[in-house]
Image 1 (cartoon, rainbow, N blue to C red):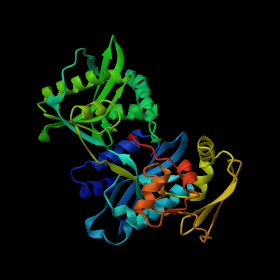
Image 2 (cartoon, rainbow, N blue to C red):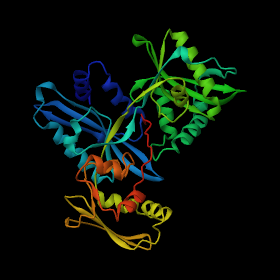
Image 3 (tube, rainbow, N blue to C red):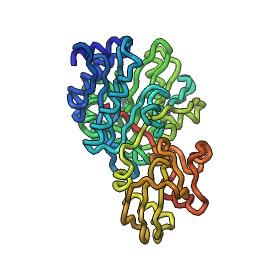
Image 4 (cartoon, helix red, strand yellow):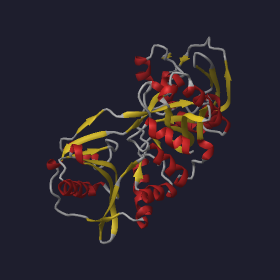
Length: 392
């Protein structure tokens, strides 16, 4: 481990990645020494990455996700296929231990070679001049966030995440980990509780980018949208206290107080996205069968009787449906039936509602659904927003 920490310091000299790994091993209950992968040469660790297990929820169905993080190779050992070796080991471990998806929030493009595709929004960004935030008629009392606030804050976050088609519930243990380490997504943050009559009405997590004059709003939870004005008023006061001129919210665009920032003239930019791949399509479809059945029922296809052949070009998944119930799922290699033609690499976008059927057909010539079956696919894979709050 000491060699891995040194490797991270060499590759990421200013990012404190070694400290992040230490925090995960010391505080995050899902990551253990078994989740650290490395390549050694001549007694020296020359490449490494770690797995960060977590649970995502897709429309009520829990999916086990293996996030890949802290990927590093010594400069003098690059272009030798070491990361491909590590990716193979990572995928094998994830498959053997029952993970449904692999995901990462890494650099653009590089991970496409390992089968990843952008599939869930990550780090929305809305910027507003602080002086455009009006004074609030009523104000909430601000004090440091404490562990006693976790349960109430967790309820606020759960309510917000219930609006997302894809989410990552935060356990009590993760709340405590983030609070006790003072880090969120590997970065330090400050946390404030906003109360009325001693009761928590909102909380704010932020960091200060003094060099650019920006307060970075990492996360905010509100008991009710009626407190958005007071939360923004606190943020304005914090900007004044730190001598900052702008606010940058990293929260989902539809959540308060970001929504109010947009109404005040805040400028939003296109978000980045999590990169995702499916490990075992057959296992995943079997797990999702009850969800797909409920979607068929809710869209008027509750009486469907047909064997649906999902042609992934390299393989196919056949789902036998009787009266809207999936009674059999089988994987094969017969790709002659092109009624439902899909691209396996971009399928995570459809699976996780990042893109709809029509959008994928417009972008990828190898996604082609016949008119007779397009409504069925649209019912099974609706287009809805998703957003993942970091678990470390």
